[in-house]
Amino acid sequence: MKQSTDTDALLVRAYMEGNESALCDLITRHKQRIYSFIYSKVFDRDIAEDIFQDTFIKVIKTLRRGAYNEQGKFLPWVMRIAHNLVIDHFRKNNRMPKFENKDDFNIFSVLSDSDLNIEKQMIKGQVESDVQRLIEELPEDQKQVLVMRIYKDMSFKEISEQTNVSINTALGRMRYALINLRKVIDKHNIVLTN
Image (tube, rainbow, N blue to C red):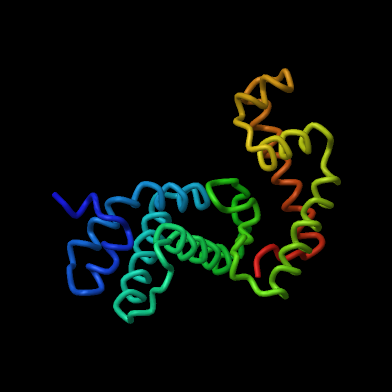
């Protein structure tokens, strides 16, 4: 089937010109990556499925309005929509997002987007320096695992080898680091998304 070898941009254009199957190709092509990203944040299949559906409803509405203009950057655009819907989900449920470092998103779901205006860039910089200060308050073993995982992007296997502890211990330290970080964040009423 020829369509599946087309670029995202060509498929988007085909869909906007009335070719419904072009959208199916796009969804099929990116479903796994987008769904995995959402699931890595919410850790619940039903919620992930709902957010995935909502993401593509939003994509379809935007394309139908002719409001899509992300030159050839379809996947990052869809990921950004999914990311924003994940944040909305947590806001509605008054829960902090899981601090995961996946793909193009940094740990606290503050988008590094070239379109951020100066004010947002300043806020983003402030949030990142606040977060680094908070990390300094963690016990040394938790801080070490957090830094290796998030800033050095090391796997838990690599962390366990480098720190001479079992993978389970490394995972446990990461878990406690995140719990403690959330406590500090709540205590200081810090808002990490804007």
